[in-house]
Length: 305
Image (tube, rainbow, N blue to C red; front, side, top):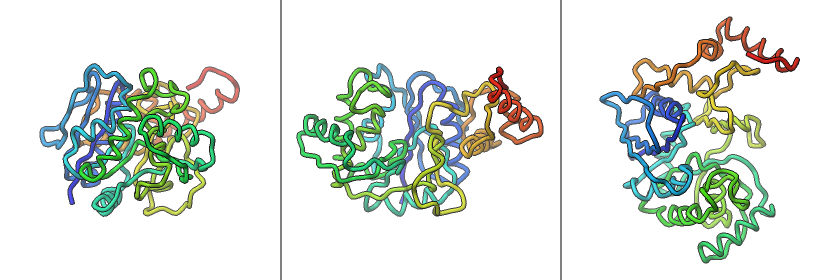
């Protein structure tokens, strides 16, 4: 079974998308990749790259809220949406998508949020007012909207409900703008999943690695020896580093650098990586020295890196 992959890009996320595209190439993806972008797409594509680009203009909501509409408008059958700040770590991810999507959606577990948490009650009221249906929380899992796979012909109702929820977010729909949905599109997705009526499978840590939560409460045995998908969650993005941080490179840092540096990659990022950052990513003697100095400077309250 073949499937398409979709992602969204704005601003500096072009430098993340290039790594995502190359990681798909490295792990044998043979379908089409669609990159929808707001503003300029700051990357070059090889002539043989199976990448389609779509420019999104005059967006009324934050680009992260465009996920369900993008899938409803552009997907033709089986699909996987992957956030641009992700890197595929193993071909096993593609195999699981192919095995799962014919019968049910595939989601990404990020955290535990008890079914009795007060936020879920608030989501229930919003689901009732926005979608006109009752929603009793039974789910304890909190899903990350950076990965979702399915079939648009079967899962259109789920995507339409998600679209309705994000369309009614306050203000621009950006992160932390709506008190009920501070994580915007992600909270909206969890709101419509929390009553357990959607029959889905999920990938969980450690098969998915999150930069903002590398330690998790889930069963610490995964499908393979490495994460299937690495997600650079949180505010500190690898491609935006200007100084060596006071830590060693984490799993996403290394996977991003390997993918962005692929000599025959489908995508080329127009990013000049500072020499100090590149040395740090490569684990060279100079990079380790700079990392150690950054760590010492941080402890002493000096200007770092």
